[in-house]
Length: 553
Image (cartoon, rainbow, N blue to C red):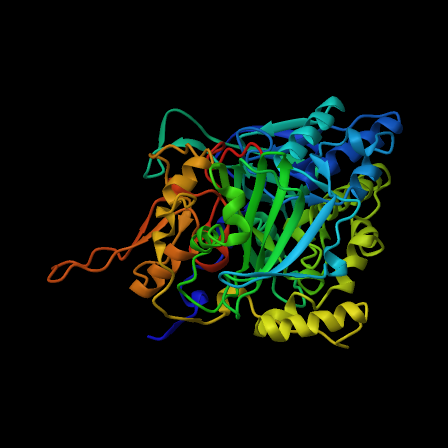
């Protein structure tokens, strides 16, 4: 075996367990709402705020519920983040930029091309210019938006993951939550709680990246996209430093191989608090590539080594990012009783490294369509019309092929991206076709040396998970669905693909009479980044409050 194709070993989407008839046995309590929003991120909370405000202005009131799988708001929220304030200004027209939960305006910025020992400063591409934008923590943004929603009477339910879609005929009726307190075999324990059903006239799926119920609805209703969605994995660290950073930094090149897409970011949050990270497209070709190890290498570069010297890593996290752009959007983002918002729908513009304001704008548009649906019976397809007429669709259309141009490597992709920028997206006159990340063949190689963590500013995967705040109980049943008896090469691929050390590959013992599993799964380590769901074992929701507890990511 000299290559592996991850799709050959990935279990199918468990659609038969994800779509459930409303009223099916197995639930504990039942709650009726006007509107149910799944996911308390920027998209879901913006939707809730705008919807509550519209109802109040109309002299009425709506029973709006927001479900969030994290134990507290913001604990599963992670982004770079440099934020375009446009959607904040629309959602809160009476507030000033200084009232928003941002850390600081972007002043100076720089883009560098790296080799192993040197850096060359490049002109900042137009799409990456951040004048007028703000450095922020997505955790803090979500907590602030959540407080605004609750002030308007929105019910925010934390610690309740949505595990199944409740349906009536072809309509979405709500969701069933995941049970809590199960043992390793999935059996109830004393003090556990059963699943609950939440039903609503409209359900908004704002699950974030690689949303499971969004996948299920699109498959169930056969809603296609012109290209399959593709993803990147971002690994981020927060550092308390001895030296201040006076600019926003982005880099290209090293430590990535030339046939992988991605780059790094370094953002100042406070005079002595820096966010740094590396984002890598999951269509990379080397089965041995390990994003976590590459981050440890990046920190050894002279550009960062001096900045981090004497400092301490105080927080760590990881998440996937939808990168397919315009051609990967679902053909429609609305249906009978349902709308798709934010990252779950794919509203991310990779060339500008932006998604938060697009997510919020999609939430605002969804709220307006939902309100008209409830008040006058207008079709939820109005949501698609509003998004298609907004800057969200215009921006994604202008850069529609830019990320896709890098499918054949950094050099050719860079040349094509430059031509796209010069022509305002008119070059090329057509569409680049893509394969799903799991369908990309990976060559087998010796791989990256894991010893980077032995350096003063390196960190192991085990220590990184600890810094994420992950305190998931060890006796929880596994929420990851792996194929049985995967080959050793595939087990090794999974162990390197996962930044949290969930997967371990074990060589078979010589002379053993019974073959032990070559893949071992440490499910409690999972930080819900969803890389596994893109390339390996399927991710499913587990009991509420599991996973990371991010504070400033």
